[in-house]
Length: 144
Image 1 (tube, rainbow, N blue to C red):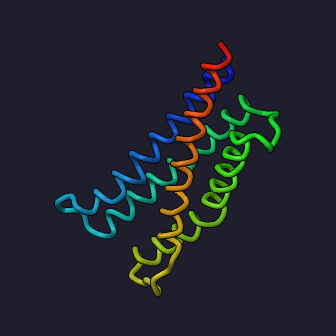
Image 2: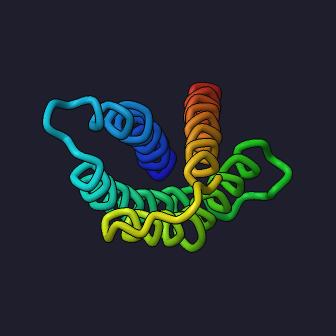
């Protein structure tokens, strides 16, 4: 049951990333009437909520998956996902949130690479989650 719970959380997380980071985020600015400040405000709320959900999913996945040796590909993927989420949570999101506040107050500074880096991390997280999910499904099938 623990393995099925982990697989569900992994695939659910990948779906959240695909829907929010790769679909909602870029499309919201194309909606009629959406201004930069309104889009940034929505983005801040959505990505703060997504981050909290990601943290909960990670805790559930870790609780269902550990202990596991770091020599196994699934463990390496899970470790990578954990490190990337920690970088998002404690480094990139605070920087992006501060930048959004500056833009909203009319004091936008110079362009930064942080937004592109956040997107790249989300792409890597997404791919790692998909590989991890299918790898766990495959190992589940072999256990029967």
